[in-house]
Image (cartoon, rainbow, N blue to C red):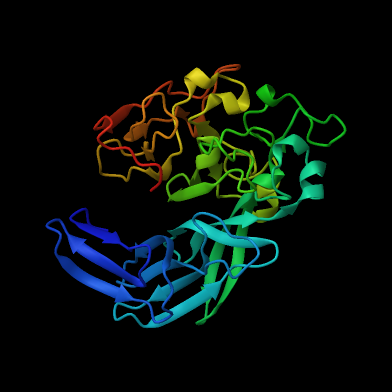
Length: 345
């Protein structure tokens, strides 16, 4: 999208609008399905619109940012392709990321039962509901007008660690494995209900074609993650393979070093963030990450736009043993103090 234009979709409307820098409407799309948007709309190179849609509460699993269907509309709002992804074991939510090959990446919940969660080492005292919804990423290849192939998949469930139950296979020293996520780390901004099934609440995804890597924002752990996309699905479920030779393990994480025992609550930098993106080539700060930091439960409640410069050296994110990943603070930040404070985006 050209920087002089803005694409947006009102949450209660089936229409999406393209406006210029003066607020004048340039174009609009209205979905023939009549469904409101999910949390993502993208204008493609040919002028088509790729949008998530909110199927509502007609399924067993429902949460903030829910989607369940993806649509592709022509410039003239004709339905070119539509595909559903709700079910007994998964449901799409929040963001998608179009790829140059015509596929797209999609965030989805992978529903786990109470017994599956306990077997993975989840502390029962940290389950206020009877299911757990870890996040996964699927790469979707559209087929025809209403079909799709899932050509690649990554699931955080394959990259967990915990020090609660020594009888479980993933038991270990959390601080020794920053490449894994502690299944018992809970730091949700939602103080009144911190142990919800939507444990991670990943809400933003971006792709870097130069690195062949994915960035993922997860609000309820106040962290962003980078993972390798060059793996096969089988490699993504393990700890070796791909350009990184680390399989689907976390290559880099930032925002809340307490999550991997390399910091304390005072070191936290992200607070319920959204919309992680790499800064594109040709722009100031190219290759850095930029994120909207909502500031939920920050000592002073304000939102900011933060730029993070990962310590990428010769293709590897450098981490000093026992220390958190750099930088200690954002490389650049913009805010308007308490005049701008948004709990969601």
